[in-house]
Length: 279
Length: 283
Image (tube, rainbow over all chains, first blue to last red):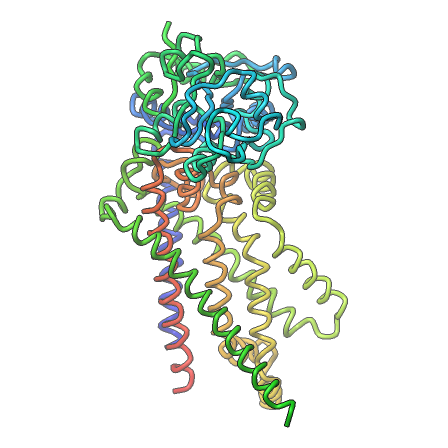
C-alpha cells in the first residue's frame, strides 16, 4: 500500500517538474521575449493590463507584465529599477519632479449619495462643511432627520490626495465615520447605507449606476459629473492617470507608452470607465 | 441535596452553550457556502475553467490562473513539506536535551505563525524577487508561501510526532533499530494522520493567501510559460475583481466558488487517503 502511494507521489512530483521544466526549455528554444514590467496604481492596473494584451497581440515576442500595489509603490519601483514603467493615478508630487510622466487618461472624482437622497448637487462649501462635521444631519439639506454618514478614503490613496487638495482640507481635520480603501468599497458603503456620502471615481460610479446600484452622482455646483465635462475640464475634481519613467522613455518602453496614449486604445480607456485624452 | 440541581443546571447550560457554538460554526459555514453557491454557480462552465480572462477579468475564464495557482502551490509544498517534516522530526526526536535551542526554535515558530501575511509578502519581494533576482514570478510566490506555511506545518507535525507513545520508541530500541529506522518505520507512519493534517492546513493557508502573493507572484493573467513568469493566482484574482474592477463581482463569485470547491475536494481526498493509510497499516 505504502509503496503504491509513494509511487503515486513521486509520479506527481515528476509531473510537476515536467510541467515547469518543459516551459523553461520551450522558452529557451524560442527567442527570449522582450519584457517590460509595470507596477503601481491599482486604479490604472486593469486598464494597463488591457492595453498590454492588445500591444502584445500586435508585437509578437513582447511580454508586458502589469503588477499592482498602489501609486506610491509604482513610483518607488521606477526609482529602484524594479519596474520599467510606474503607474500613478495622481500628478507627480513636488519631490517626484525628477521623474517623467505621460498621461494616458483622466479620471473624474465626484460625490455620491444613496438614490433615496433627494439631493442633486453640493457646492464646494457644503462638501467642506460635511467633511469638517460642521453640518452633521441631512435635515439641514431638507431631507429626513438622520445623521450624515461620512465615508473617507484611507491614508495614501490617490483619490484622497486629490480630494483633500481640491477642497484645501487638512486630512487630520476631517471627521469621517467610515474609512474606505478601494473605489468599490466606497461604492458599497453608499449602496448599503441610505445616509452615507462618499467620493469616488466618476467612471466606476456611473458603471455601478448603469448596473442598477441605488446610487446618485452629485453635481459639483451646476456641473454634471459626465465623461464630457471631465474631458473638457469643466468638471473641477479630476486626476490624471500617468505612466511614469525614470528617464525619458526609450525603446520598448517608449513604444508602449506611445501606444497607450494613442487613439488605438481609446475604446479600452472608455471600457474601463475612464476618459481618454483627445487632442 | 441543595447543590445538585444547581450543578445540573450548570451542566445543562454548558451543554447548551457548547451545542449552540457548534451550531453557530456550522451555520456560518453554510451561510458563506450558500452565498458563494448561489452567486457562483450560475454561468459556471468548462469554458470558464479553461479560457483566458477578458476585459480585466469581467469576461472570459480563469484557465491561466488555475495553472498559476497549481504551480505556486506545488512549489510551496515541494519546499515546505520536506523542510517542515525534517525540522519537526529533529525537534521531536533528535534534539535530545538541548532545551534552550528547542525552546527558542518553538518560540520563533510561534512568532512566525502570527506574522501578518503582508509582511511575508514584502519579505518575499525583497529576498526572492530582488536579492535572488527571481523577479515577479511563480517561483518567488511559491517560495514566499513556503516560508509562510512552514511554521504551521512544523508545529502540527511536531505535535503529531510527540503524540506517538514512548513505548513504540522503546520497543524499537529494544529490537536494536537505529534512530533513523525508528523514525522512518515506526514514528512517521504512526504520525501520518497528523502529517496529512499539517499538509492540509498548509494547502488551505496557501490557497487562501492574497497579500503575500500580490508582491511576489503578481498580477499577470497570461498563461505562465515557466515558473519564472509572473502569474496571478485565484485568490489575488478574487481580490482584484472585488476591489478594483467595477462589474467584476460575478466573476469574483465564480472564482471563489472554484477555489472553495477545489479546497473541499483536496480535503476530502486527503481524509480518504489518511483513512486508507491507517487501515492499510493495521491490516
